[in-house]
Length: 306
Ligand SMILES: NC(=O)c1ccc[n+]([C@@H]2O[C@H](COP(=O)([O-])OP(=O)(O)OC[C@H]3O[C@@H](n4cnc5c(N)ncnc54)[C@H](OP(=O)(O)O)[C@@H]3O)[C@@H](O)[C@H]2O)c1
Image (cartoon, rainbow, N blue to C red):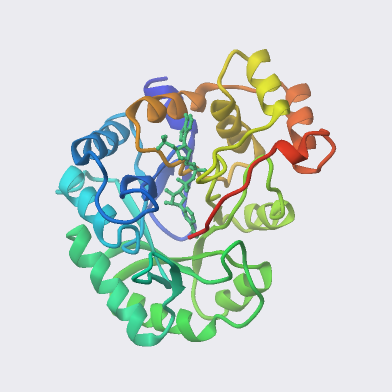
């Protein structure tokens, strides 16, 4: 098989003709430090995107609040006119404060404005998939999402959005959403050390809905774990490759969007699509997230969430 074993296999978003290779790319790291302003090296950012797509990645995750606007503008500069089959998934529901903070933006007008910002900055007439992002800084919060989702469902009916997903949500919020419109993917915080969504993932797999973990490598402070290091040494890979391969093996509905601003890291991450982790090592890795590995205190978390 070619191109890194077809980049980890493929998954078709439910009710769509969009078949995504399971190894995608998350574009948030392409903006400047703190996901604010332009990157230090725009050409390097463009090179990462072009190399990802040339390697077979056909799923790019973004938002117009990265930068803000900057990440989408770089995607357009690097990849427009977009190749057939490339699916750009964006998200709305947040905005950046002048102090670089991450704020909710869930009113009707804010959502409509965000959709039009995405269309303009990506150079599209219609968005492939839009995730409604709700919740608190570090994870979902309870409460109805009917009001903002109804706005997006209306835009979908008008043809400005093709498909809808959710981000930072609970299973109850997914169930509420499914009474309003079809949901093709859920994007929540999950990785080998952060396993709160284990049963949610299994439930989504049963429904054929994609689960797209954000911070798959730990986010702004990449994962650190002695169990991960030991697993990496035993399969002759890097800890980040093991973190990627563990996710690919975790469930067939998991689609990956690891973020990087570096072509070298991109290549390293994409190579993990061919890495098979033996079951005894998977069992050891499973114990990191359950706190049984004894090195839970060494697993890193994130400084901010988006
Ligand atoms: N829905 C949401 O609320 C939400 C929240 C956060 C993120 N996201 C999405 O999820 C995507 C992924 O999240 P993320 O980028 O924040 O976190 P991530 O993929 O978990 O990790 C990115 C970090 O890991 C580093 N890294 C990447 N590959 C590496 C490698 N091979 N070796 C060492 N370090 C490596 C990157 O640094 P370098 O740049 O130096 O490689 C960066 O610091 C984002 O791009 C965004 O699209 C969504």
